[in-house]
Length: 225
Image (cartoon, rainbow, N blue to C red; front, side):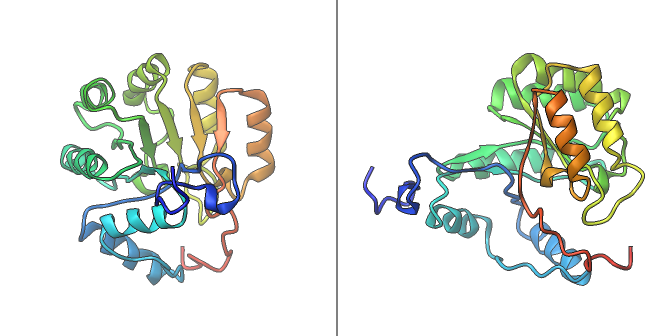
């Protein structure tokens, strides 16, 4: 691969390829709503643009592989968002599609099974802060067991950053890890702000990893919440 190739990360001086495991992409319109929400709460968005433009920007930064993550704030949007994710990932070199579910929505298991076994999705992104659903939701356990069986990753946002609610308790993640020992889990943002406790969990559970995305969260954001 030539050094000028946009999929080559070696111009950065590294001997390995970079995978951005925490990259969000949403359909146009949806993306703008997410940006507006964050900016309303003192969190500026540095990179805006069409999804394809942002994917190309990542490749231009020397990141040849990246996830396509999104999340749901209400039921009824699962299937259309998954179809968009599938089609967008297929159009982008290096894209790794993840699905997302709203816990308790009928058909979640069937949808996840289709995504994993037919569409090639590599995991799920779950956002309890937004969905306001507990991680150890009975509806989700069959899905999590399927993920353990098929080696699919659960990337989950749980912790007190940028603000907490009752659904972001690391104890819920600990229960899930105890209940389904083979489930591969990536804890987003190193469990911020609960870094010490999150590191302790990673020592106990070999199937738990963490990403370092946005770990330096300014405590001044989301003050009103």
